[in-house]
Amino acid sequence: MADLALLLNNFLALFIESAPWLLLGLFVAGVMHEWVPVSVLQKHMGSASFSAIGKAAVIGAPLPLCSCGVIPAAVGLRRSGASKPATVSFLVSTPETGVDSVSVSYALLGPVFAVVRPVVAVLSAVYAGVLVRLFGGAERSAKQPQPPGCCEGSQPRVSPGAADTCCDSAGQAQAEQQRDCCAPRPPASESDAACCGSAEDGRGRGIQRKLADVFNYATGNLLDDIIVWLLVGLALAAAIKTWVPADFLTQWGDGFLAMLVMALVGIPMYICATASTPLAVGFLAAGLSPGAILVFLMAGPATNISTMGMIYQEMGRRTLALYLFAVVSMSMVSGYALNWLADALQWQQYIIGSAAGHLHSATWQTVYALSAVMLMALMMRNVWQRIARRTPANQQDCCS
Image 1 (cartoon, rainbow, N blue to C red):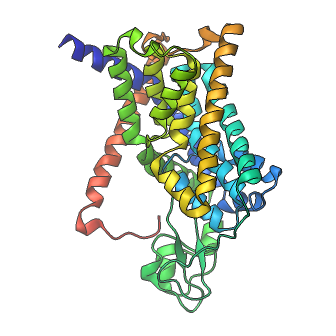
Image 2 (image 1 turned 180 degrees about the vertical axis):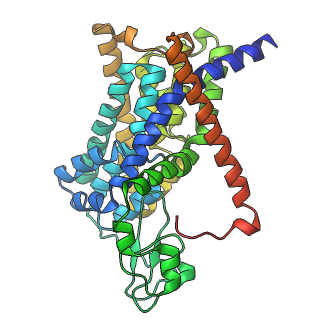
Image 3 (image 1 turned 30 degrees about the vertical axis):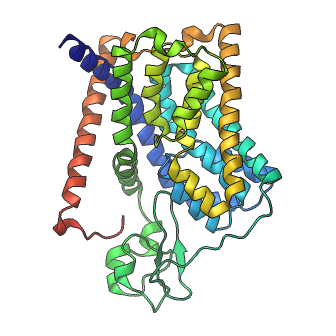
C-alpha cells in the first residue's frame, strides 16, 4: 500500500506540474492551427531546393501535429506537389517538437531541453531532407488521387489531421459526400449551404468565432490526439520513479550503448512529443544521461510503424532507409553534443528530471492546481463525448 500511495503521489505531482504548460501549449497550437493555412505550407515546399528543405523544417517545428496527425498532413502536402526532400523534412521536424511539447519540456525537464529540443528537431529535419535530396533518387510526381465519389473536375481539399475529402464543383454537388470539407466556393445548393456554409461566411468570421475555433480544436482534436499517450507516459514515469532502482538504467552508461538502447526503444513507439516528455522524466530520474534522453525524445515521436509505412508507400524504400538513418544518427550525435555541453558548461542545474521536487509560491500552487483540475475536466469531457459519438443516433454530423 505504501508503494501504491507513492506511485499515486508521483503521478499527481507530474500531472499538476505539466498541466498549466500543457494548457498554454494547447492554446498556442490552436491559434497556429487557425491562422496558418495549408496553402502556405504547399507554397514553400514545392521544390527540392535547400531553401525548401529549410522552410519545411522551420514551418513544421512549431505545428501542433504529433505522430498520428502529421501522416495525413504530409500525404496531403506530398500529393499537392511538395518534393520528397521537403516532405521528409516536414515529417521529421513536425512530430519531434511543437509549441505544446516545448512548454511541457520546460515544466518537466527544464530550460535546457526546452531550447535544445526544437533546435535539434530542425537540424534533424534539414539533415534528413538533404540526405534524401542527394541520395533519394529521381523525383517522381505525386498526383493527388480523386477521393471516392468526387465528380470529374472537383478539387480535393486536404488539411492537417484530416483524410482526403472533396467538395463537388458547381452543378454537381452531392451533400452526402461532403460532410467533412468545404471547397472555397459558393455551395451549389441550399443543402450545401446548410452543411458547409458559404465562402463569404468563412472569410467573414469575427474574432469571437475564431477564438471559439481555437478553443474547440485545442481542447478537442488536439487533446484527443495526445490524451492516451500523455496519461500512459505520466503513469510510466511515475512507475519508473517509484520502483526502478537508480542503477538499473545507468548500467548502460552514458555513451553509445545507452543512446542506441534509447533509439531502439523509441523507434517502434507510437507516441507524440508531448506525451514522450513524462517518460523522459522517468528515464532521467532513473539515472540515464541527458544525451540518452534526447535520443529518446527525438527518435520516439519521429518514427513509428504508421509513419514508416506511409513513407514507403508514398516515396519508396530508399527514402525510408534514409529517413531512419537520418533520425537515428542525428539524434545520437546530438545526444553526445548535449552530454559534452552539459559537462563543459555545468548545465546540470538547468536540467530538472523530477517535477516532484519543485517549490512554488502559494499563488502559483493555486494556479497549478486549478490548471490540473481544468485539464482533467477537459479530458473527462472528451472521453464522454467519444463514448457518446459511438451511439447510432450520433453517427451523423456536419462539417468539422
